[in-house]
Image (cartoon, rainbow, N blue to C red):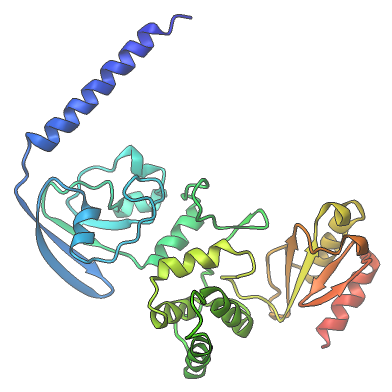
Length: 317
C-alpha cells in the first residue's frame, strides 16, 4: 500500500492548522472582555484582553483553579461551568466530560479561549475530583491515579460536611505535635487516618489550611499511598494477602468466604461499620501462607473453615 498520498495530505493539514493558529493569534483581535467568576458563594469581575486562554487569565487574577498538566488538556482538573460565552466544546475536552457535564456547560479552562464576555462558575475542587472518578474521565497515565488494589475508588458521596468541635480539636492537636517536623504531611495524615479510621473531606480541608498547603497537594499524597483511605472504614480492617505464596494456598477462596460471611465485596464496609475487607499483594509473611491481618493482628495458615470463627471473635470484641 502506498502511504505517500496520506503523508502528503497529513502534512498539508498540519501546515494549514499552524497557519490558522498563527493568523488567529496575530491577525485577529478581540478587544477587552469581562469575566465574571462565581466561586464559593462569591462573585468577582475583572477585565482582560481577549485572545488568551481562560485558565491563564484566571490564574493571573488569583482565581483558584487547579491544573496538574500545565494547560495541556491531559488531566481534566481545571473544569469550570461556563454559564454564558465560551464557544463550542472542543474535541480535546470531550474525553474528560460525561454527557451530563456537556449539557450543563462544563468546560476545561485551559481550552476555552476568551473571545467575548464570560460568566463562569468554578466548582469545588473535591467535587471535580469526585466527578472525574465517577465518570472515569481521568487519564490513567497521570500520576494521580484513583486506583486501590486494582479497584477504582474516590471520595465517598456520604462524607461528612462539617466537623464537630472535638474533631477539630483532635486535628489541631495532631498538627501541633508535628509542627517542628519538616515535611511532616505523611505522618500527620497517618495519625489523622488512625484517629478517624479514614480521611474525611472536612478534615483534609482543615489540615490543608492549618499547614498552609494547597488542598490539591494534600490530595496527591492521600491518593498516592494505599495506606490512606478516603472512604469510611470499619472498626476492624481485614487485609487478605493475595501474593503468590498465599494465592496458591487458597487465599482467593478465603477472600470469597469472608465476602459471603460479611455480605460485602472487597473494598467495602459492613453497614454496622464493624468490618472492611481489603486485598493486598503481599503482607511479607510468605512462610505462614495463607495469611490475613485484622488490624495489626496477623493470622497465619488461614483456611475457609476458620473464617466463621475469626469473624465471630472480632465481632464480639
